[in-house]
Length: 223
Image (cartoon, rainbow, N blue to C red; front, side):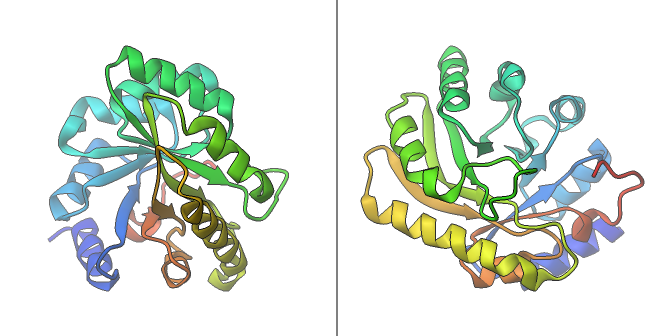
């Protein structure tokens, strides 16, 4: 059994029923991704379009593909055909462009709204107070389906530092859900990464995005 397979089995044994794992595959090879899939995780998260296109050639529809990085408007045309969900929608303009290309590809694109739960100026995402208005603006789009919220949380060593961010995003999630806005299905709350997923689950996450804990440390780091 390979190290990645061991890591996947261990994580899946720890994660409560009902919580879905997205393997965050930034900088990872197609072979590493295929090992994760063989070990029992079906969802692969990619941050960069070019990397995704490269590994997609080898992996294809064996995975469900989640876009989890910042999506530039000019990359939508490449992302829509191959991805199953875009977790990082942060403007109505971006949502409309996704909707346009989803229609051209004859598909309904699942999306999450990215919440800047820490109100950090260097991060992408919608400010907490603006989420409801954005939901109402994009809900009527015919070829996107809003299925929940996503947040990053801080990149710190102490998982407890992330808890207030997760609490805030859960509060917004519950509020939007209670509004019962037509064409909106608050199903997924995507929070937590390798260092913070346990805290995220405690605060209501049912999707976690885990990379290093599955694949090991990266040979090179972007951030």
